[in-house]
Length: 233
Image 1 (cartoon, rainbow, N blue to C red):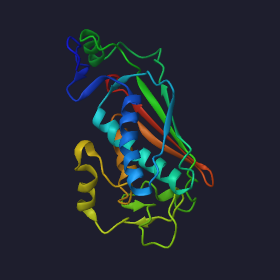
Image 2: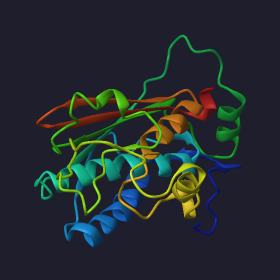
Image 3: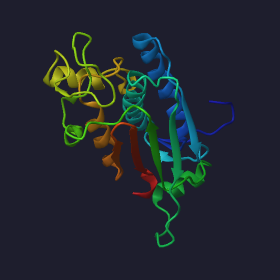
Image 4: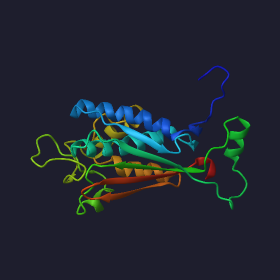
């Protein structure tokens, strides 16, 4: 932190969290994993309102962004479109004119010099990874259900690959601990355990947000992550 600059943290909450910064950090992390596994380093672009900020728990957003970018990058590379960037759009939620007086946390933010950010954000992650097969789309929110193919499988992987319950040799709590036990909640593998998407949705819903997936089979996926700033809860 710069000398003389006040911290924007209130406990574990960053009252001026910029989603674009988290996306870039997670993007670099996931791109390195892809480069090690596939020899290709996927790229991404951020558009919309990249300068927006809001009050949120950084560790939660880091986990969610990491898992969603893993899915997008892997699908893009395995579909043969690894040179096409994943497009991440950030949209700031407008203030509700009917909203009551600012919450206690909002007031604390102003007193600490953190400023007042957006009441929430929606982040869209768009890839050209081929989408998800309609027959497996209802199962993507199931724990231990993964589209990842091991190197020994004869069926090719990709964004629309055949799902395999379990996704690997580890099961139950061992697999779950591997997902959430690393620094910042990061898992160093690109995919395979089947916990990423449902756990990400659980994190998003904790503060009133959510995740929705729109798949265009044969083309790609749009994943919508909506987050409500904790100062407006």
